[in-house]
Length: 290
Image: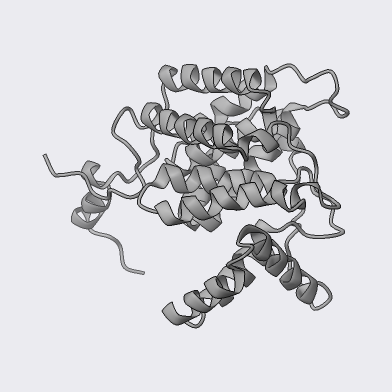
């Protein structure tokens, strides 16, 4: 097997190419704590604000921020009406599941790297208690149901334009809607039936993942619009309360005009702090060489 020359390795790891993670800082810890506090004042519960901030952190390639979110979540008192006490393991599983669903909006590499670094940062007892059983394996027995569930999620998000949009995608490339539906909506963004999951990122939280990732990326305004409407439709048409869906504290408010504004402005603030004021690491590409 051939080896990379020092020149090639130096080019790959050149600072202007941003080859590594985005580092976190004490300022990020302060911003995340403020975001969690602001969410509580708005009666936006822990699953929603953890989902939003995790998706932003994953998009910006900042696993250290994901670890900070984990510790803030652990220090957050559970509301008195919460039936099941949240544990550090549960919070870690939520962050992992959000990071996994980020694949559909950010691509595979950032989720691989951030989830790996996040897992390595966890206390040993938490890491040892995380689920190790996959839940999304496709089999002849579940394939058609998974495809139906993916199409149902697509229809829920894009209601009113669902078939027209599939036709438009197919004109761009005939396999584009096939991959989006079967590779993402069916096997990742929708949740498998009859399989125990440590946490469930359901219809509403999945829309929050989409909005946070796409807003933090920049350059994809039409998709942000689509998923803002997708969040609203979850409540307008009852999918947020469908069988198997868990209630999301503050979700209905996030789907309103005021909630949309707060959410987008909060994402922007987190992007600014995590990036050190340089903006997203996702779309701009290479820095100018100094």
